Image 1 (cartoon, one colour):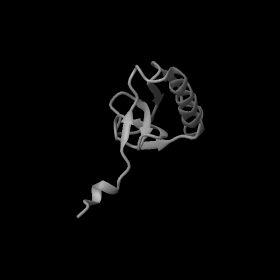
Image 2 (cartoon, one colour):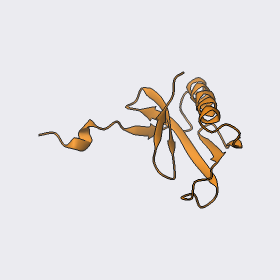
Image 3 (cartoon, one colour):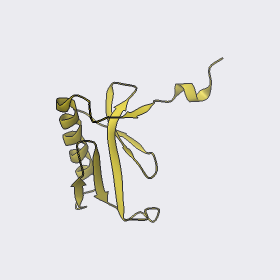
Amino acid sequence: MRNETDELFVFRRFLMDEDAGLLQRVQEAAVEKLQTLFPGHRLVVYDALTIGIDTDSPMSETGVDTYETGLVDGEVPAMRNTRDGHVITLRI
């Protein structure tokens, strides 16, 4: 019998030793998506794997939401908010 959680998509963040070309394409798509979702918010690219963007969420302690880039189910480019775990898929 399958568990309900078996049906959920699994996000796996990238590691530094991933293909540099893929990391760059996903990072560019993530930056573009965040700028579209949060126009006018200051965005900072920390490294090839992590992006920060200003937020006015009352749940944020720092005023910056951090997103990790990765893949959903090993094939769909995505980013995950480290504060709340929300996953946003990307098109590259």
